[in-house]
Image 1 (cartoon, rainbow, N blue to C red):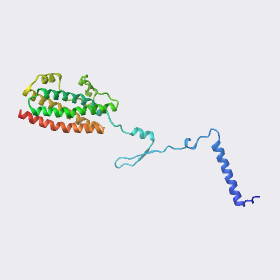
Image 2 (cartoon, rainbow, N blue to C red):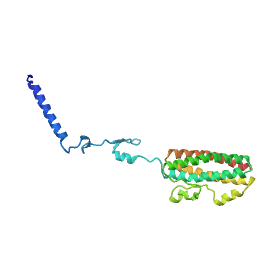
Image 3 (tube, one colour):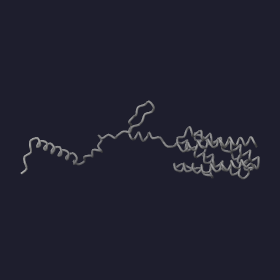
Image 4 (tube, rainbow, N blue to C red):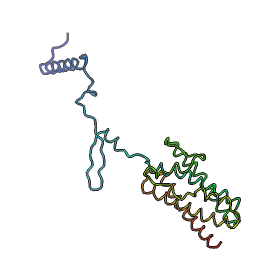
Length: 231
């Protein structure tokens, strides 16, 4: 026969039995919600760092999701869409120079332009496709991609069809001078577009492309003006 419990142990045992009984009743009660899903359980907030001189702030997960900044904006898309046909026209001009220029320096410059801007077109088209944005094609009128009609920065520096026809007809030294003047105009437009997106855009890759365009084409403008002075 088991010995009788001492009074303190008996009281403790009785209290434990009552606690377990109450716990079993509440947790097994039909319709009782798990503790983690009850309305009195608060959702943890998200700590949002404050600006310079400002305190941090705790906000809801929903507000935190809304506060996430987009990776790109309209200015980025406009720049990439406009720069595709802009580069494409420069390549057409470069191909004409390889056929009609008299100066070896002009042909070499045209070859460098073609070699640089061809891969850039593919990269810009890929950037647009990855973001489900339309990509301009060679069959389309470049002016259809001029975002200035929608209140945004425009496509500048493009040669008109009359200017392109004049370039196609030119030969020799006359072609060289016409090509250099036209390409300076074209490059200056590209630099203006790069400057616009540097201010209004937010995408890192677009910013890098714009910076490369501005740097490269500024240097080429300097060489072309020097060539014009010597022509």
